[in-house]
Length: 252
Image (cartoon, rainbow, N blue to C red):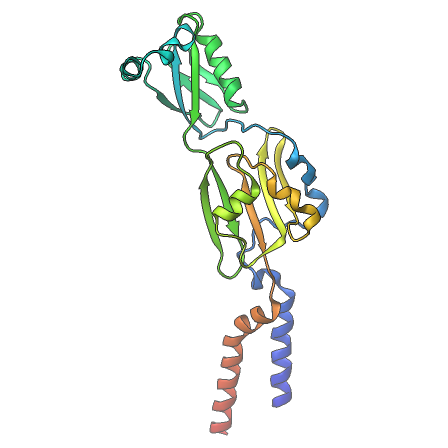
């Protein structure tokens, strides 16, 4: 009987050890082929945030190249409370915003500066020397740390100089994750790219200062502790087996 019990326990062990999904069902962004990672060196190249569907845009249009903005504060405030007060527009799923007079305009995939110039050109027929200001109101970055105590944080994107280390420190650090396996997922005009960064190696420290962009996802791969996971997952089965053995011995 003891031999059968050992065989059963061994079979359960093999099943759980061989099945990574059973051990780590909350794992995300698994990459089987390392060739799918984009070169991390791309992150060190200057990049501007691009407008995307779902962005809420605050758009202000001023005439005469924005001369009202240079008037005394009282006049500027009065002006801002009338026709030039900011209007909020949401980029739809097609990448368009519906603007007064102009109608539909495609802005997805443009930088803020490019969108300002495009809208300014379109209003030039109805507004004298238009000056356009655009702000994105809902920019954020997502930080997800895997592991037993998985956590996720949505971090407001406040300036274009936000770096990877800014995101990590704002989220409270890596904790149970692997500093050697930090994955940054970015939606680009050429498709979704995934970068893997190793901050455990001092020679890779420069990537701490890689600039992140709105809607980037920073995912920290969790540390794998197979023995602890094995104990956690097999404990109910071992308890069931031992209970069965006790009942068997009593009834025998």
